[in-house]
Length: 186
Image 1 (cartoon, rainbow, N blue to C red):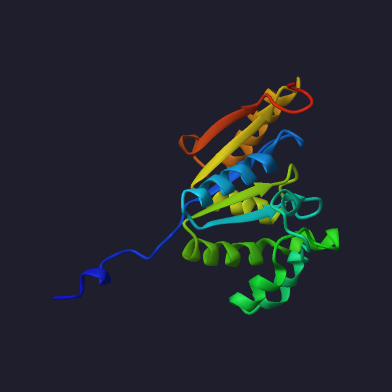
Image 2 (image 1 turned 180 degrees about the vertical axis):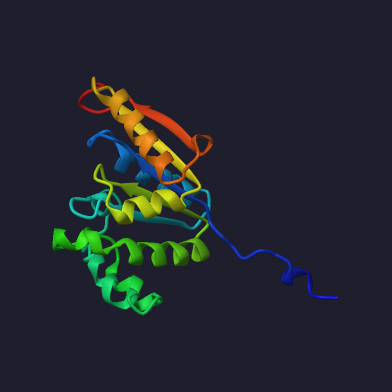
């Protein structure tokens, strides 16, 4: 008889992607709050900022010295990422924005590692969906559609829901949050 743990599936943390069709609606703030709350509950929360050109989630989380995520491009060409590769990139946008389009494969590999090593993975995305964001959204277990009080927010949310559907996310895995705080909602 095989050991009881042999039949157990490998650990796979859920991935929650915050998506939106408009910038400045609070995606980064919501992701930071969810990650912080998860850690207070004793969960190992991983955070990935896929606003690869202008992301500032590192600032909200108190990272003093963000590092260039593009450092994952070269080691991922071999098909795996090591812990030193991941630690060396820490958290931060790519220094050269033109490298953002080279990040799809590194992000896929990074998500594999984060799913194994964390209890939950939160992803902050950009309004622009390059290959890296599309791959992360497609791999997510839940999409949190974030909107705000702006006039165009409902139309933007509708477009981003349609786009998530086109990369394979069923509507049953989407939830919406409309942020009424901040400059527009105050």
